[in-house]
Every structure is written in structure tokens, then in C-alpha cells.
Length: 90
Figure 1 (spheres, rainbow, N blue to C red):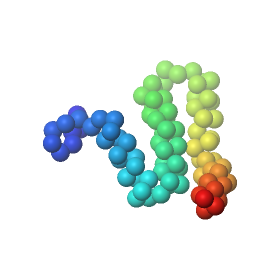
Figure 2 (figure 1 turned 90 degrees about the horizontal axis):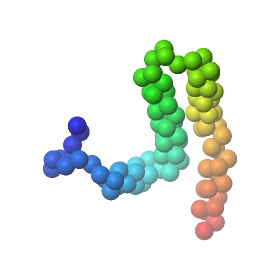
Figure 3 (figure 1 turned 90 degrees about the vertical axis):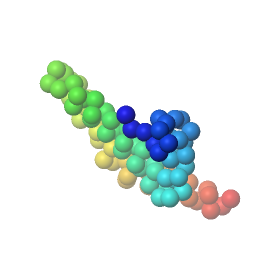
Figure 4 (figure 1 turned 45 degrees about the horizontal axis):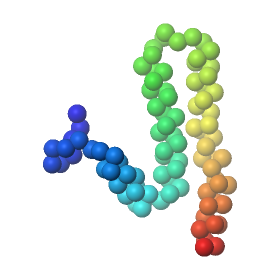
């Protein structure tokens, strides 16, 4: 099991600190894109672990659920531009 320096297991506060640090270090836009793609990748890992025991309909659903992951950078551009505009006005 992965442990931090000091011999303790990371907790919820550590995860929030890591998220806050990553937002400050690489920016909100990049964190949003990485978070969305990571969530979609986890779906793929679960299906890979299931192996060949899944039906064809499940594989079709998986293929269609991956589509937003590849389209999200293009679909999120207007949302991010809107958020930037609101931030600039305030």
C-alpha cells in the first residue's frame, strides 16, 4: 500500500490539498480536462478487468461512452471561455 513520508496513509484532506495544488500549478482549465478524461479511463479499466465475459451490447455501450472523452476538449472550450469572461468581469 502506498504511504506518504511519515508512515501514514493519505486521507481526504491530502487529496483535497493535492487538487488545490494542481489547480494552482497548472490552471483550472487543464485540471477540468484531466479530471474528465481520468474518469472516463476508469470505465475502460473496469471493462478490461471483466475480460471477454461481457455481452456485445455492453461493448457497444462502452464504445459510445468513450466518445465524450475524445470530444470533451472541443465541447468544453465554450464553457471555459464563458468562465474566463465571468472571471474577467468581476
